[in-house]
Image 1 (cartoon, rainbow, N blue to C red):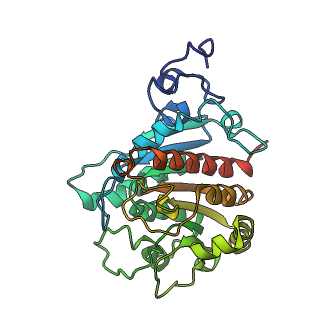
Image 2 (spheres, one colour):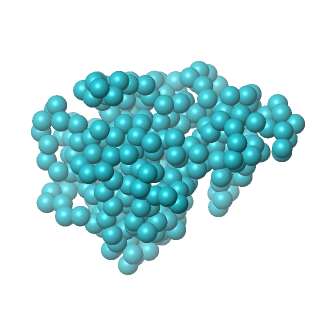
Length: 320
């Protein structure tokens, strides 16, 4: 930062010149970029970009996750001044992180959205950066995976969710957050035998070859054993992580469109993610944060922490 220090920094999202390091701006003021990173579309010199996709027109129940990126950015300001807790390195200091802003689209031309998301995320990957995407509903993961697979081939997927999103859908014109994974498997975007779901607690007739750890298994086995299983399934393959916030129990994340009881506690999710250090992460997303259904802001706070964990996981295998 070029500003002198605590109490003097303001609007770091626009004014900071050093893309690395903490921010000491007042939490309650200034431009709410993600972790007070600089807003920019010029990724020259950056390592990883955080971007928002405020699209929620593929939901089966309650809309509102279009406001997720904004809420997650604001919640992230609670963390902007400290290194991520529990990691033996500081991703904020070691890597140049950009806030790439939100993807632009015409809300009345829904049919154009999938290609727009794919091109938007693909542009980040083409710049040589990791991509952390803030949704939006869970449909956005399908074009995210299209962008990733176009550059890396079929990827391993680690999918945190209450729902499998494997319901059959062979209509190419349908845009549905509950069928993104079915289509990803059918399109060959992921490697089913190297992919795994965590936290599922809805009935799924056909897993299509994707491994699964149901929520009751997480509770019985514990986070460490679940993480070991994930690592054994994914191996050293290029990996994408998608975290649907409804993987968490509604007691911890009520602000979502399709809440299901019996889910993970935030501490369980945090421990599992931390123990996944070593994955060859190329990117990830946090989706389905719908802040209007949570007056406390706890859901957005959880979403912001998940995004920071994804950044830290991405940087772990690339740190000095």
